[in-house]
Length: 178
Image (cartoon, rainbow, N blue to C red; front, side, top):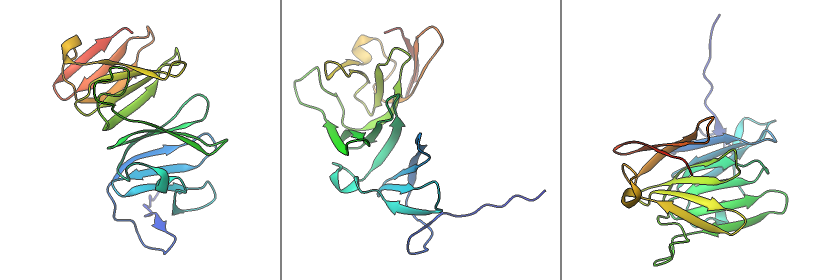
């Protein structure tokens, strides 16, 4: 039994050289590739990357995280905010930090995104804490060190079967029952 590694190439048949930060396979089989240099897609019937048509609309080409929600929308976390892409309509919505507004993101650098079993969206940010997004109101509730979080650089989030959020940070592990 032999194994083989194949390097993915772009449309010019060149092997990519960008730092790949995140990958996602959506429910349609499209592979989304986020790097420090932009957003690419690979369709289910190709082995080459193509620049995503929505890349030009993003506030930053530095893609930190990608997530598909239960409604098949794509969340794109960048170093300059959060983008929500609705593939059915092509609509792209932006969320950014607004100084002095506690209902907005508290950091534009998005490290990770999950959707809880209750339908809430949780975002880990770079030194902006943990933000929970309520899609009905369009508001964020943010938890930081002031609320007991170990550290404001949230690197990962998972939900356990009791609905608790386990939050990995730069300086330890926190648990939140929202």
